[in-house]
Image (cartoon, rainbow, N blue to C red; front, side):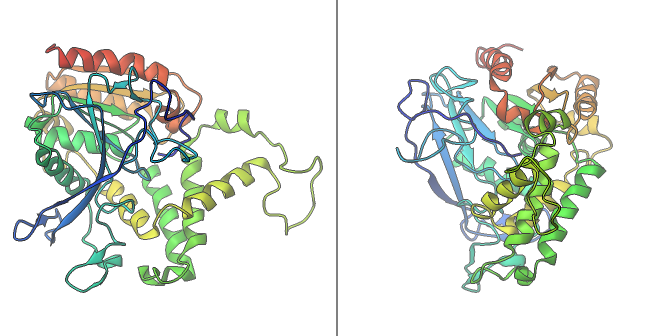
Length: 391
């Protein structure tokens, strides 16, 4: 759900280079977006980026669904002075896992986000004020509906694949079931058909930290500093779930931050290196993310259950028509392998083509964002076979 992309340069031969975020307005009145909650909204602005070229018959398009706090900037650089490239730059580009010499890759910021797509921080055209908590209640179904419409607006009738990890993987599953005619292949990484009770619990703690911050002001904080302490704490809690016990021990252990001895002081808040790291993650997160969006997106994740409206998970997946690639990680305790196996079992029950592998990696849930070479060695041939018409 969060990670550091390997650094590179936009001038490198395997980089997509300099890219620009694009914007498109969809669901213009009277054709408003109808939310699963029954509310409607329009127009909806969507921020997105594309990499590579769409071929003549528009058959090489791949849509990347980002995780909880991601955005449309998945690869490349916005300027030559950027400190870091897009969040999946090591996986998208010429010769990489999503090979832009062969495929046209699309990534869009989710509905309800805060990186260019309409969300609670956007202006409500009906009132002239920001939506704040009056923004419609959000589900993954609503997010996928918007992205499916974006794809159609780009002149693409069917995607070669939809790819995503964590919350992005949930979007992939929803897309395969809700718009089966639009997807030839689904790549689901470190994800599941529903969030576990433990995952819901961690999200609840994060939201409570935001609600309890005096700066939250019932979500109407945009003219002030806002709930920066609560949002930072929410990030700190969540970030722990993205790591594994082994990775934390290897990277930090019990090492002190700037001393060889204990301070024996309750005023020293970041004495251990792991404490300093988490505080840094929280501080940096506040600089780029909106607390209201965090509330909406984590609750959206809690609500997701692919089998809703069907008799079972297998019944839901029976609606799909695509090939599936499912990967889990042995140190991921937020989305453990048992959840991926449940998904694979249901796919086999309804006789869907599915490839599955548990990858060994010490980095926990964030492995799909970090350990990219093993993932590319599996995803690339899967996509190539799909493109070449394999069954």
